[in-house]
Amino acid sequence: MTIATVAELMTIDPLCVTRDASLKDAHDLMRNKNIRHIPVIDAKGELVGMLTQKIMVAKVMGLMAQYGATALERKEKQQLVADMMATDFAAITPEQSLKDVAGFFVKNRHGCMPVVDENNKLKGILTSSDFVRLAAELLEKAN
Image (tube, rainbow, N blue to C red; front, side):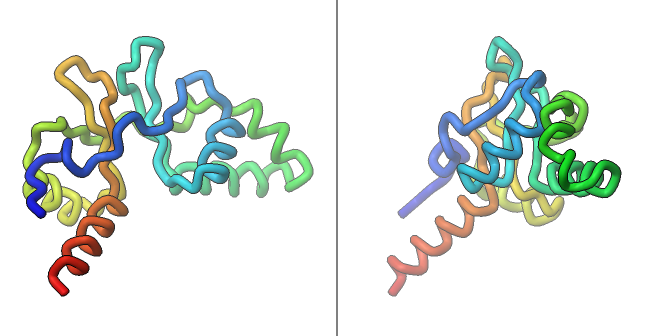
């Protein structure tokens, strides 16, 4: 098994949200689909941000501490993804070398990287789980 590029390992068409989605929408998506990273796109499908489990947990815990558990759902519906998404992140392209990207993951301790084309349109997502899955497949074939 030889996998050389990001395109060969990435998840194509990942679940995503728009800037105007609520924290509740994003929280439900993460919980129901068991995902830790959500790309945020605009109406043209261009990547504008990333919402991570770490950001989500910090926001939800802050809301609970400030307003209590009984008001959490109401407050989650009032918070927009645009107000909490990360906008300072690295994106990669499908053609990039998986070896180079793996090194970047390790060096910078990233859990995921969005994959975009030359027009910044979201094409996929590459996560640390993808690398673990690849390692498991390679180990299985080696035995």
